[in-house]
Amino acid sequence: SISAPEAFSVGYEFRNWAAGSLTILSGETVTKSQINSKDTFFIAQYGEQESTQYNVTVSGSTQDGVSPYTYNSKVSVSAAGAPAGQSFAYWMRDGKIISYNPSYSFYVWHDTVVEAVYLPAEDIPPALPQTIMDAPKKIGDKAVFAAERTTPAGFEMIESGILLTDNAVNATGSTFNTETPGVIKAIAQSGEPNGQFTARCDDADGTWYARAYMIYINVNTGEHTVVYSNIESI
Image: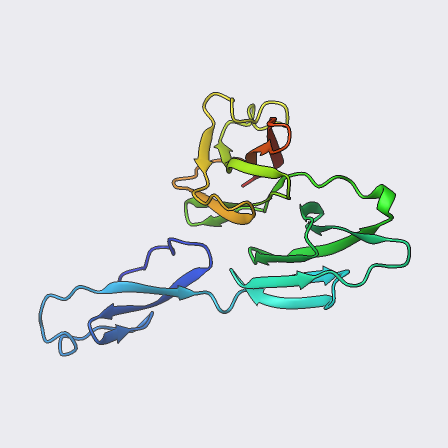
């Protein structure tokens, strides 16, 4: 009896064992005749999870409502016409500002609430780079963290990533930053100004904490700034 290891990536699940053209499903028995009484290597096969779906709730868009999606599905939303005396200000995802563009796209990680916010022109705040953390996931002994960043016009993203620590003393708003000793810095490989990225911690015993960061420059003043997200733990 052999058990397949947990999927290496979020959103995947075990499908079957395979050896050449021979496929063995979970719970099936392999007979000598099937392998011609020879040494045989079986490889665990994985595929995207289709049974698990997440609800995406959208408001203030051209297509409001609640829709189910599988993990990593791309969702695109567009702001609706603004109410009288107001203009589109920004998109919020799970209560945090994440885009200043009337059209916004993201990939599903978990149940998500997306809301277009409209305000009087004089109340619309200036567009600034933002980064947010999603709720982490556990796969066996692995912890997986996900974040998203947005860089509006007038700014250039220099570096972004996710900070990780298992030290609760470091995991506070005032101490959890890029300069904190002992903190693991997982740097995002993509240089795109907007996007989502993940970091995985293997052998994640105990409680781990994560916080996204982004270093950006104001292209008009040359000033460098580091912005941080909310802190998540698992």
